[in-house]
Amino acid sequence: MNKAKSLDFIKKYTMIIVLIVVTAFFAWRTGGAILLPMNVSSLISQNAYVFILATGMLLCILTGGNIDLSVGSVVCFVGAIGAVLMVNMKVNMVVAILIMILVGTLIGAFQGFWIAYVRIPPFIVTLAGMLAFRGLSNVVLDGMTISIKECTAFVSLFGGGANCYIPDFFGNGSLNLTCVFAGVLATVIYVFIQIKSRMSKQKKGYAIENMAVFLIKTLLIGLVILAFSFRLAQHKGIPTVLIWVLIVVMVYGYITSNTTTGRYFYAVGGNEKATKLSGINTNKVYFLAYLNMGFLAALAGMVTIARMTSAQPTYGQSYEMDAIGSCFIGGASAYGGIGTVPGVIVGAVLMGVINLGMSLMGVDQNMQKVVKGLVLLAAVIFDVVSKRGGKLISKN
Image 1: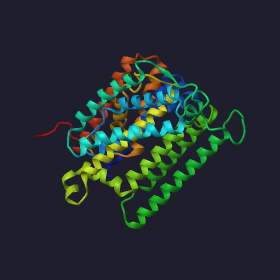
Image 2 (image 1 turned 90 degrees about the vertical axis):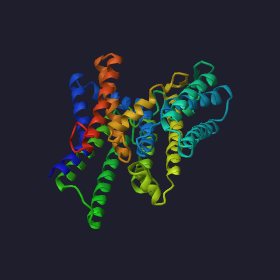
Image 3 (image 1 turned 60 degrees about the vertical axis):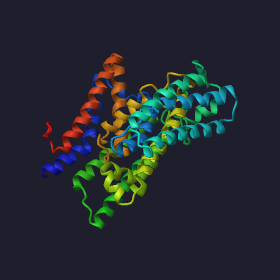
Image 4 (image 1 turned 120 degrees about the horizontal axis):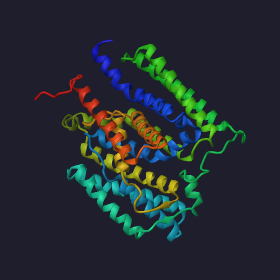
């Protein structure tokens, strides 16, 4: 294996290796507590908003390393509107959900217009949005907390509360058989897709990875899926919010890898001028990235208030940092044009494992932020250095 292929292999699978090592480290330091079924389930529930926001943030980053600083405030604002509608104004749940989605999407369209068509830098537009929508959240809630515990249908739908899990259709024993079956089915589907994809690439004459690497990768990921589902089955089964996360991941994973529109995001980030000369409307691509971010921020807002069973002005703080960090840690390039949805999810899981592991170890919250900051910096340094062929210092 030559140097170029070695670098490509390391870059492609580094975060997965790091995730395994970090998980093993915290399993050792916590006496296996991090792998307890309850904690595995909590990892999903507590980080669902990160998975959703990071998926949307990826599209923004793909367009040239751009980010959206307003998502945390938008999450709070949309959640505040939903709580006021359902609790104070007694609006029907379905109508409230549609209004929340519409508000988030309109916010994304508003910011996308200034970024795409007026060409104001995304940093400035979304910074303004972060301040404005945080203030509007306080105005809507009047600085108070609104409980939505009575909105049981909404809370259950978006995975809040202690019993928001998919019921076991095969019994009520200590092991949730529905979850086990879902894990086995997911593993079979994954293996089938991988084999079909490899055969298709081989038939078309595309470059494919070494058979040994392919088999090891497929086997390991299959085992992880099975182990993960078994752990969830030992607790209460599949959290409702996991269904929303899977829908987002599968839909956007398909869009970015199998559609023309998805390819446009990579093209713009790779070389905007060349993309424009090829006849692609780059303004529309930027607009779609931020429109989509608003939509997913609305979904994250609903998931957040359902989990907390309330809305308050402080929700969403630092959510944008978690989303951005997950993208870069998951392999998205700071320059744009590179990144995948599965990679982002790996980055989000890694961040979640670090948070949970340090919390179980009793590490101070401030030190947790220091560690996450260093992990993010290391991920970006790795990206930059790998682009230079392994050279740390840049030559003018």
